[in-house]
Image 1: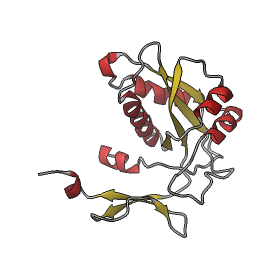
Image 2: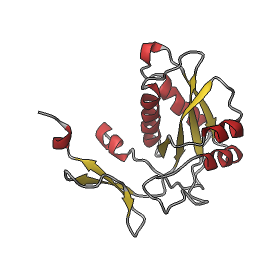
Image 3: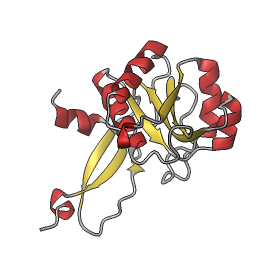
Image 4: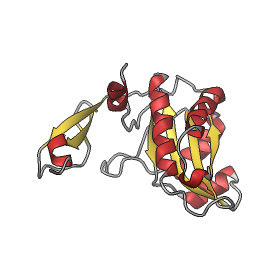
Length: 190
């Protein structure tokens, strides 16, 4: 798969095949990709908490808010939940400001997941205090993002968007997830 196709395949998947488990080794491989990414001032303040364990996954799941535009949808049902998580943390002893490091790392991890036949979702809507308590995350580590990972169990399609169209993603009656994208012409200023 060429790089453009990999980027297009890297969607925010919110339903997974829970029968396809992930190993800690796969998560470690994905974090290794993030280790090679750029970091503001080369400070490298990000740390990662990994879970491929069903018990730990069950502690993480209720701390997350899924698909804000799909108000009637409570999130993935049992059997459709992620089988791995990477919690992205800021080590505040190194830096108080992650800059854009966590975005670069998260996107790199998800592209690595696509290459492995997996998918994921970057979640920023998190009950951080509940997650801190559930995972016993020490003070001094700020929870930035949670990456939910697994084998996708849904179809996500990109829709071309005309100026003025609604940008909110939606699901059709067959459960296909549609994501409107602005045109290239609208994005580039002359």
